Structures are given as C-alpha cells and as structure tokens.
Length: 281
View 1 (cartoon, rainbow, N blue to C red):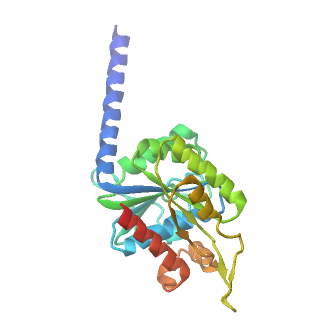
View 2 (view 1 turned 90 degrees about the vertical axis):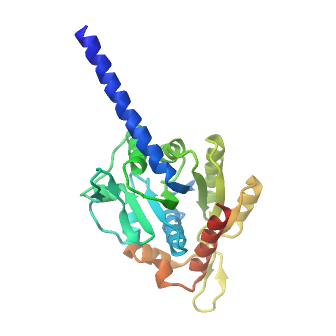
C-alpha cells in the first residue's frame, strides 16, 4: 500500500509541475502579439540573415521585438548580432533574461547557455521540444509586438515543436531563385499545410547582384523563381532581397548591416517587408 500511495503522490507532483509549466507558457504567450517562424527548405539560403535583419527592421520601426534561435545544433543569432555574453541573466523569480541587443530588440539562443561554443549539442527530439517550450515559458520576454523565430533548415523537430507550442505562429519561408532551392521550399509550404500553419509569405533572398562597376544587375542564381512559386501555391510574395557580399561580412563580424549601409537595396527591401508585417497584423 505504501508503494502505491507513494507512486500516487509522485504522479500528483508531476501533474502539478506540468500544470505550472503550462500556466507559465500560456502567460508568456499572452504577452506576445505576433509570432513568425522563419523557415527554409534547405541550408545556405541566408535564412538566419533574413531573421536577424527582419528583427532589426521591425525594431527600427519602434516595435518591441524578440528573436528566438531554435537552431539547437547550429545557433548563429548571437554572433550575427555581435552579442558575446556567455550566459543570460536570471530574474528574482528565476526566469531567464534575454540578451539585450538594442532598446527594442532582445534575443535568446542555446549558444549563450553553453560555455564551450564549439561543443556539439547531441539531443533527440523530446529534449529539443522541452528546450523550445522553456525558451517561451522560462524567459522574461515582457510585452512583445513581434517574436521572430529562427529555425534550422528543413521540416524536422524544431519547426514541428514550434507549431505545437505556439499554435498562432505564422511562417515566413526563405528561398533563393534557383530551382534546387525552390524544390525544397515547396516541401516547406506543404509542411505548413499539413500542420495547419499559416504561411505569411515567401521571401526570395540573394536575388540579383548589382555590379559595383557598371551597376548592371547580374542574376547569379536566376530570377523570378520565388515569385512564381508563391503564385503557384497562392501565398503572398513578400519581396526580393538583393545579393550583397557586405551582408555576409556584417553577419560574420556581428555588425548591423542596416545601420552601416542605410541607403542600399538590401536595407530598403527589409524595410519594405517589415512594413508589410506591421500593416498586415
């Protein structure tokens, strides 16, 4: 009898703990007005760069913005923002304080919780799901107008967990113009249809390079594929981001591209997409 009673107590404690975690998650979500997950069907399309620059563009418009890095195995957001803190702070209520990039922009990433930046994170799906929940429930985000979630490439554990944890999340899908990228993007679109997540729109990155000598636009990766794909699937086309090598340089050095290169096609493109996000929500 004692063993049965003890087991019942343990079950009740676990249920209470889970109820408390669910309540904390719901309270945090109630303070976040709009959540967008930035996805891509394959790697190498500049998805993290798009996430960072969209977050910066929204923050520059006066919105309170958070960026959540759920690329557990390859987190890039802190270094792209130039944030080098090893640990996030903790409130008196034992909630994590996001990394502060600017007055209107804060970030959370697993990289800031691991002392060895070169250590491999070897986790299965359930552990990653738990961490993504905690990135919402155990973080003191405060009141946010936008939460931008940078997901790893593909349609695996992380984006699936986001759809389960944040059922109101909408997807922004990033592609480049070439067909091999578009073929994978179509899988991302169908993933969203399967899990019943709204696709807010599609962004074509690395779309045309303006020659610095003659100013002629060179379509390095082709042209028009993103807009055709959006039209074929009946989803909004948010715009084209020109190819600019300085975006890579700024990302590697943790320098804000939009502050350094204010009057460029890239900055104007991100500003236009951020404007659409502000208006449509």
